[in-house]
Structures are given as C-alpha cells and as structure tokens.
Amino acid sequence: MITVTDTAKNKIVELRTKEGKGDNQNIRVAVQGGGCSGLMYDLEFDAEINEKDEVFEDKGVKILVDRKSLLYLLGTSLDFSDGLNGKGFQFVNPNASRTCGCGESFSV
Image (cartoon, rainbow, N blue to C red; front, side, top):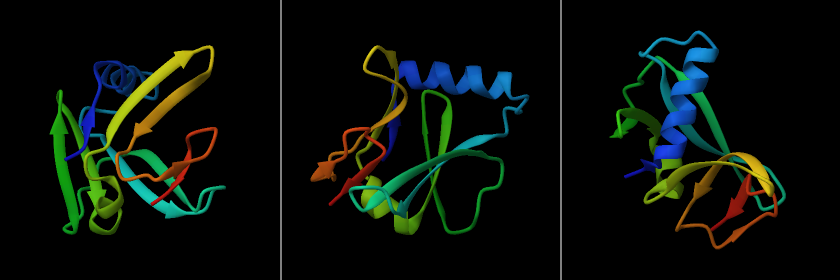
C-alpha cells in the first residue's frame, strides 16, 4: 500500500484546483531509471486507470501505480514539505537503501 500524509493530500487538492484538473485526476506514481542513485520517482496527474495498474486510496486520494513500480514502492508514504530545507513532494520509502541529497532518486 502507498499512503499520503495530510500535508500531501492538501497540496494535491490545491494543485488540482490551481491547474484546473477535475476530481477524476488521480495521482500516478512511477519509478524510472536515472538520477544520481539509479532510480527516480515520477509523479503526475492522470485520469486514465490502466488494466495493469494497482490502485490505492488514502485520505480520498487515488494513487495509481504500474506493477513494475509497485515492487519499489510498497509501504511508501507521500509527504509534502515547504520548509527551509526544500520544497516539494517527498517519498518516505522503506525499500530504499540509499537516497540522494535532493531526495528525488534512490537505490534498493
């Protein structure tokens, strides 16, 4: 399962409104090769649920994950920070053995 914090949920709702996205726009989370640690997170709005997607819902937010990415993301929590040390969505991933300084890439 993938969860979202209250802070992340509020930011998702805010961005959905700001970008003129409807309530049918879900959050798609994926893992791609790249970044300084080998794997990178990809996060975007997506209204289409594919047949090979796993769908999770937490705090009213639907999260879509392809099966390949799911192996890397199980147990992950999506958070949002706008503090002095960085701004943006952050992944708290118990599967990551190493993350880069910016938090956008990881390795297992």
